[in-house]
Image (cartoon, rainbow, N blue to C red; front, side):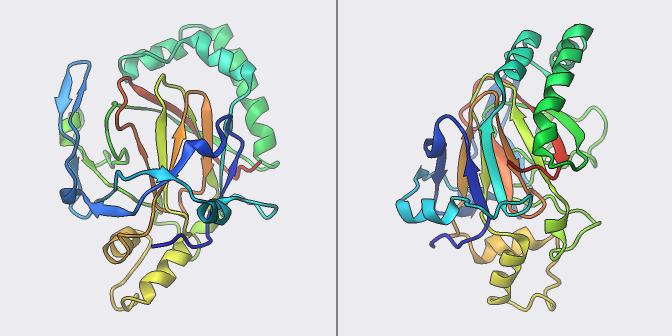
Length: 292
């Protein structure tokens, strides 16, 4: 299935579009062998939710038509564009001094962050100097420092319903999804801004997304089934979309250390991936209405 014109890419990464690839779609998680995790004494095979769809692994470079379909021009905003780039050198040096990369677990990451108050203050100043122009004079807020084990194909999961002290083996991964909440609908998902995620680990990680807005996805589903009869909503729209359009391509962005993506994750299907990585994945995430 060919790409439709939808969510775009504004790419300022050093490697340009060499960092971007495309595949032939998705498959129900049971249709693809799941790679095991073996890191720092943790050994298990990730499990998925019943209706989780994962990206196929037949990645290839974009052809000229696909690149033209994805490349952003003038009309960029916080809900129709994925922005890619490298953080400033001064900020990169701050993170390197804290020495997060190479940490073995979440506790070590947070210990390093709190270990040098003066360095953390300098980091905060440089981080705000970087984010403020991107925020377009709108408020932004810190979301999290995320840590994820290496060699996990699809990263998103809901651990809020798990008991305290849960183990990685207890997690059920969501597969390709949107970040919709009870506060939004399919028709308002584009009004909730976007996120910036900075790779602070040693390995290149992947950001995967489908270049369709929630409204575009709904309109495609409506050509296959009755959306009102089937009660398609912001929570279950991934299930219906990937059931009916498993051959719609997924875009993969390979995000090197100290590179960022900005994406409207409420308004598109997406996930992260550490497949093939050897070290702990570390990210810093802010919410806002960023663009550049």
